[in-house]
Image (cartoon, rainbow, N blue to C red; front, top):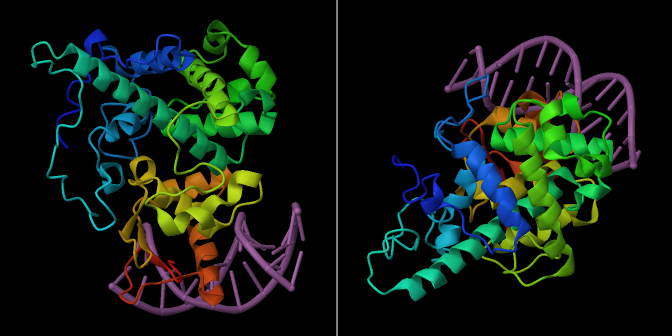
Amino acid sequence: MGSASPGLSPGPPGRLLLPPDSALRAGLEKVAAAGTGPERRDWSPSPPATPEQGLPTFYLSYFDMLYPEDSSWAAKGPGASTRAEPPDEPEQCPVIDSQAPGGSLDLEHSLEQVQSMVVGEVLKDIETACKLLNITADPVDWSPGNVQKWLLWTEHQYRLPPVGKAFQELGGKELCAMSEEQFRQRSPLGGDVLHAHLDIWKSGWRPLRTGAPRSPSPLDCPASTSEESWTDSEVDSSCSGQPIHLWQFLKELLLKPHSYGRFIRWLNKEKGIFKIEDSAQVARLWGIRKNRPAMNYDKLSRSIRQYYKKGIIRKPDISQRLVYQFVHPI
DNA sequence: CAACAGGATCCAC
DNA sequence: GTGGATCCTGTTG
């Protein structure tokens, strides 16, 4: 890893270039600016959960795809797993480095590709959050409980200071009606960023509903085809708002390595063996999903152990700490 | 000390 | 009844 995303300096040169009419663009740029400015606010009171700080997860997750850690993005086929760096065309990222003289057309095309990739990732993340939180994509529909879930989630994802209390009792409609200034008043630290995130949601949910042109997401409902093959169809529980099972939730996290790979990841996907890298974080996510603020790994692991009898999850043959195995990976 | 195993109880659906 | 959540005791590495 080491160097932070090359060519992604916060200033105009590395700015996200989204379609000019895109409301998403505005939100993204606001969020990006808030997170990467020279006077970037460091409000995480506790030591960050993950080592590779520097950029907020928001940024990281969208640029992970440009410099993929997980092979899924590289799409080199199912076999090319683990962290073997993609040997071919490692410089897929078309940004910056406009060395090629007269290559402006190519550059534009490349930038368009990057834009659509970023927008696609934003939409995918919104979808994922919808599923994991069991909320609708349109913030206007949110109940006060949904709003709190979203706040918790966003705080957690983008390491914002805790602001949930400042927005208690607010429904989605009220939230959406609030200006950035009002956000700032309620939450001087991070209120503006939160507003920007909400902006993204407000403009982002539409394509999800209307089927506006965009690349299909592996997490679309109903389950679509992707290299994630076996997990997709089974995991897609939360589309209909049914209560999600723990094993489904775990698989959903495993499906998004570029978002949750720091918390939980496959050790051997074919065999269904996975490792919980950050037990506290996984438990916390599960708690958010189930509205159980007191959730911890002790309780979560007890629930996992209930799966032993049911033949859903077991300990792998060589038992290791925090490593479990899905009994029926296919 | 954190992870692990599993019994017991409670609760929502 | 099912699927968890919670609490607990005891074990293990």
